[in-house]
Image (cartoon, rainbow, N blue to C red; front, side):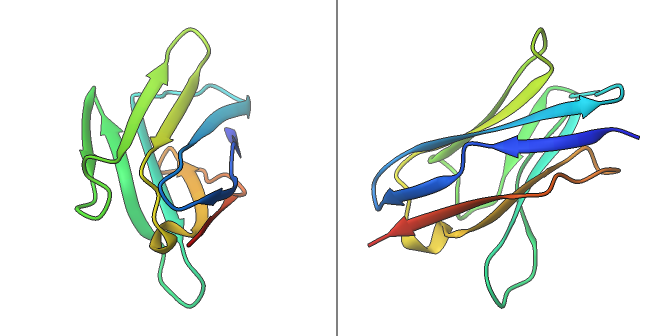
Length: 110
């Protein structure tokens, strides 16, 4: 089974940017089907962005600010997050809809 590893989280001020990465530590990684989710304290996990067969889709709350991309050669998927807001604070997870990463914390200060 594929093991996914996220990285790139951290603390940033509102208006700042972060880029999250998701790579496979083992297994075959089909990055044609990937998603980024997030879970804030006390809230349900929600879909932020996904890519399926080359087509991306975003949650309304992040449209225009977040961009999902992939590097096929590096077998890595990215989530570029710009114009971050305090309400973007959450643990961010990547998934291939079978396996999940351990999550990376993103904290946006006001």
